[in-house]
Amino acid sequence: MPPKHQPTEQRLAENSAQPTDKSLIKGHTSRFWGETRTRIFLLYTVLMVLLSGLTVPVFRYLLFRQIDLRVRADLNEEREDFTTAYEIWEAAPDQTLPELKSFISNYLVEQVPEDDNFHIVLLDRKFFRSNPFSLPAPIQSKSALFQQWKDVTTFTRGEERSDDPDIGNVLFKAEPLMLNGVQRGVYVFVHTAAGERQEVLIGVSLFLWMTVGVVTLALVLAWVGTGYLLMPLRTLSRTARTISDSDLSARIPKRQQNGELSELIDTFNAMMDRIQQAFDSQRAFTNDAGHELRTPITIIRGHLELLGEDPQERQGTVELVIDELDRMGRLVNDMILLAKSERKDFLTLETIDIESFAAALLTKARALASRNWTLKIESKGRIVGDRQRLTGALLNLLRNAAQHTQPHDTIELGCGIKPSQHGTTQQVEFWVRDTGEGISPADQSRVFARFARGQQRRSEGSGLGLSIVAAIAAAHKGKVSLVSAPGVGSTFLLTLPID
Image 1 (cartoon, rainbow, N blue to C red):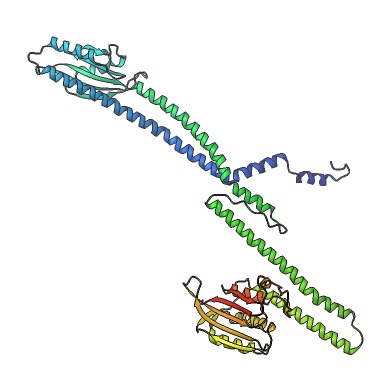
Image 2 (cartoon, rainbow, N blue to C red; image 1 turned 180 degrees about the horizontal axis):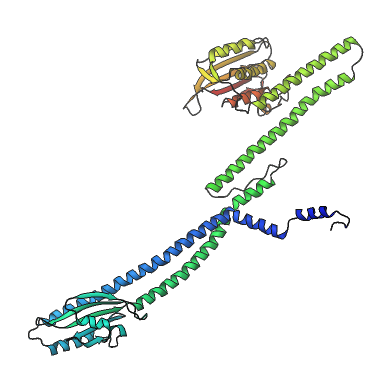
């Protein structure tokens, strides 16, 4: 609690800066609705509700349609059975009305109509018999529909809407009864649709509740499944928050599956490997550079602190300081060159004739030291590259060979065009081969590292020469390799694509 003497404005400012419960709830709510998981779930919910909402009326229509077709088929079948039996009876000679009544009575007794089906017989425009005996009000003898059937003279079919919800629509087929060429009555096949429709509505209701349950279960499973599927994204977010410039080792565990998320995990982990490698390389480079620069600075400072009044001594100190400063300048230039090698404008490309280029290099190399210099041209051709950068790289290799050979040793500069490793394209090879002391296997694995020097030999350079060669080769989409054995000599091979 702030002290009583604290200014009111300051207390108000502090209170306003503290998050309230309402602001926290609002922040969590905003974050919840903005999450990818929530958006996917909402989209899935909308689609499921819409599709389920469309499914119920379609299902209801199809059921009604199927029942209607079945009812009409049943009425047709019952009519055909009656027509067949009546034609057989009518074919007998001297049939009379009493015999017709007897035939109708016997036929109705033997029939078992389908549910909600009724057989009604009218003789001489009056009700005669029915099966079942009890008839609903809309089709009884006093109904309007019954009065309509009295006037039937030809086969008639129809459907009438009933006001009674327990009856529903009434479907009928009316067949005239002819006896000796005279119509004596009407046989009516009737179906009341309320029963089947009620069953359909019950089925639709059950289907609706089942759909609601299935959709609810599907949404719950979708929410859980979406959370599981998007777990790598949350892991990615948590991992990214734990990464700092002092700790780049965090990675997302690899999942045993394929797809976009698995590819995202691989891409992120590969990116972090490259970043960690770059940071480690930069840190090591900074440490090595500091170590390399510390020595000449210490030498210069020590000599300047002990600088006396003797002119000859002062002259020697000045020369030593200038020499150390020159070495520092070369080191800084090499470091700047390595830094520039990763830029897109590092190279200035031109077409280079490898034969004349190699001959000019050998001329410059002869001034490095007194050695048995030789030139070997295996094939002629042209490449596209940066003449100045390639000259510097190969002169570094030639200078390195001169430093580790004796006057009687041979240093060979060669070039040629050979197929690539896959054989689909051609590439240019430059090599510098010497018969000097060679390089031990322990040094060969680190010879291209920055500030690397052989453990058993001394070098006047900064330790960046071969690193510069490797950087220039990489900028040309090429590579540099080494084959060496102690006491036999060394061969540095610079391989570059033609274009």
